[in-house]
Structure formats: C-alpha cells, structure tokens
Image (tube, rainbow, N blue to C red; front, side, top):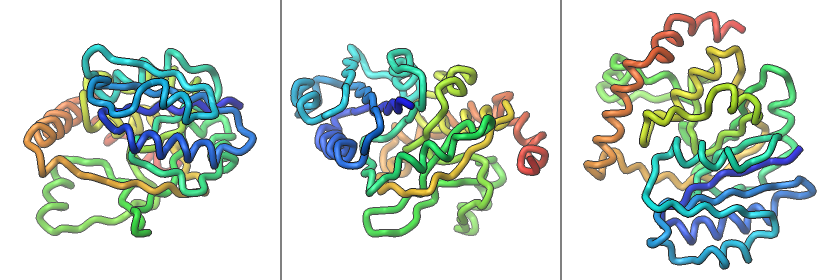
Length: 250
C-alpha cells in the first residue's frame, strides 16, 4: 500500500529537512509519496531543489502564491495523492523509530478510519494528544481547576499526525475549510466517528516539539477563539454530543 505524507511548511525549512531525513531512515520497504506545501515560499531558507535532493522518495512540492489555512493546504495536497494511506503530519515532529507496519495494522479493519501514534516530548514526557471534547463547560473546568488527563477513549486527537485510509478522508470531504487554524482536527474526528468509523492508536510513538502560541500571540489567540465558536455552533459538535455515549459503546 502506498503511504502519502502531507507536510505544510511556513518557514520551517530546517524542521522539514530533519523530517525528510527521518523518512529516509524509517520508511523501510514501504512505498512513500511525500507532498510538501510551501505556505510562504519567500520565507523558506531552503530551495525546492534542496528539498528534492534530501528525499529518496518522490516529493511533490506545492508553492502557494498566498498563505492558506491548515485545512485548505492539506485538502489541496490530497488531490495530488494516490490511493492508499493518507497521512497529515506537522513539520515539527520527528519519527523516532516509527513503525509503518504498525500504522498500517491500525487501519486494517473496515471501520478503522484513522490511526494516530503516541506523542512524546523531546524530553520523553507523554503529551496530551488524546483528548476530551472541548466544550464551554469543560474549558471552564480545565482552567479553573487546572486538571487535565489523557482520555482512554478520546473524543478527538491532535492533528500533528493523523493517518486516514484515503477513501475515508475522501468520503468525509477532508478537513473543513471553514476553520483557518485550530479545531480542524477536532471537527474531522467528530465527523469521522459520526460516519461510523473508529480512531485507533497505533503501536509506535513520535516526538512532537510543541510550541503553543495561543496564549503568546494575539493572532493565534484570536484564531483559536474564533475556531472554538465555529465548532460550538456546528452540526457536527451537537450531533456528536447527542450521540457520544452510543459512539463510545461501539
């Protein structure tokens, strides 16, 4: 099965180069197709030729004339990918002895729609990647009592690494482009489960160097707040809340 990986870079040249080296090391005998979107090409410190030279796998480079959102970038890249496994990954991850066999095994059954790995920090701590649905009341509880815990059966998972069966991603219509940044991963996880598919944790881990900007930059805080409002007003949000107990009992 061909495995396609979509990476979006916004002046992440060094991180992309490191990730391409990881693909060279850990891909094994699997057939990969890498799709790299340069969201702001003029800010990159590496050229297309340098990226191409670093990858031993076919690398499709997409240059945006103006920056697009997370959803739009990955949906556009999907149009250039073939059938098989469709993986959306952040440039700031490292594959860390990733086992692609385990990734494929995680989506081997008919209703296994999307797989995700365990995420650890560069210092080895397990990150909060499998999460409870964000609601106004859960948000208030979280910041009032400072309580977080990993969900054994999560409502959604972090979008820094998501592996979909291509036909499932197509059936869902990809990411919802109404979200420019933040909550695209929440929305697609809800819609995937409402469509009858499961999210499966694959038996391997990645390193994710998280750099949370929501509370550090006003633009990111604004985008996050706007995305949450869109999520809370969406049909998927309320349909999932209404059916959550049935979905978790499947």
